[in-house]
Image (cartoon, rainbow, N blue to C red; front, side, top):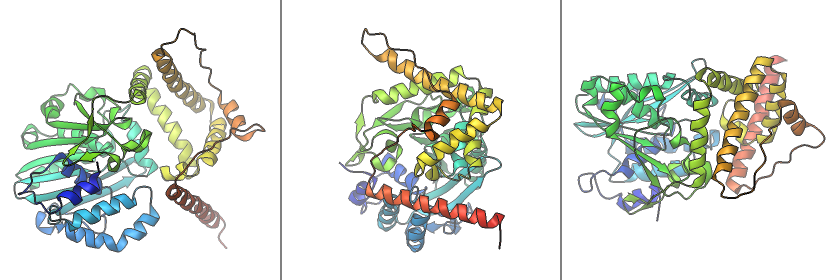
Length: 429
C-alpha cells in the first residue's frame, strides 16, 4: 500500500506510450499545481513557450526552502518531494507546462489559480487549483453556499474558453477541492462546441455546485463526463449539490486531514476503494445540506460576511494564523462579536446556533436508545465571551506532532512580527 509518491516511483520508467495514463496520473499533476510557480511557469497559452516538468523541478529546487519556510502549511515537504520525483521520472519529465495564472483579489473576494499540461499534440490537460491558505480563498468557498456564481468561477470559465480558442484539440479538466468545482462549473458554462471537445472532468474531493446550476443545459451536457473521488471521511467533497456518482477512497488520515490527496491509499496502479462513507461523514453531509436548505441565501451571505469580517478586522490573512494561534483568536473573535452592532451579532448567533442545533438533532436521531436526550441549549455571545475571558475559562488542550509544533511556532513568531510592523507603521520614529 502506498500513496502518490510511491506510485510515481513505481512507474517512473514507463512512458505514457508504454503505460496509458491512469486517474492517479491525473491526480499527481493536479496535486503539484498547489506549488507556487509564479516566477517559473510561463503565463502564455502558446505551447511553444512552455517549459518541461524537468525544467520546472530544477527551477523550483532553487526556491523550495524559502517557499516552505514562508508557507509550510501549503508548501509541504510531501508536495515538494512529489514534484521532485515527478520531474525526474521518465514518465512525467518531458510534459510541457504553461498558461500559469494566480490571482488573489481581496476586494473581489477571489482566489484563482490554474495551469496547463501537454504531452500530446492533440490533447491538453487543464488544472484548476483548490483553495490556498488565504482567508480570502476560504471566504470565497463559503460564498458558493448562497451564490450561483463566485469570482473564481468567472475566471475559470474565461481560462477554459481561452484555452479552447487557442487550441483545436481535445481538452481534459481537473481540480482538487474548490478546483474540482471550478472544473465542472467552467465546463458546464462553455459553448456546446467546446463541451464536445472535453473528454473528462475530474473532481477530487470537490464541492458540488449551487442547486440552481443542476438543471441548466450546459451542466446536463457535461455531467456524464465527470468523475468524482472522495475519501471515506469526506466533508468538503459532499458540500453543495452534485449529480456525479462518487468513488470512495481509503485514506491514511482522519477527519479533515483526509482532504489531502497525499493521504489517499494506492495499491499498484489503482486507488484502494471502499463501499461506504464513515458515519461522521454521512452526518456532516446531512447537517450541512439541511442547514443550507433551512437558511435563506440572504441570511447565509450575511452570516459569512459577518463571520469573516471579524477575522479580517483582527488582521488575519491566512487560515494558518488562526490554526496555530487558535485560543487567542477565538477569544478575540467572541470579544469582537460581542462589540458588533445588534443586527450583525444577531445573524451570527442565530444562524451559527442553528448549525449546531441541526448537527445535534441529526446525531440524536441516529441513536438506537430509548432514553430521551435533553434539548440542546447553546450559550449566548455574552456567555461565550465570559467563558473565554472570565475567571472560569474554557481549557483547550491538544496533541500535536513535532512537525506541527514547529509550524505552529513559526506562525506565532510571524504574528508577533506582523504586530510589530503595524505598530511601527502607526508610530514611525
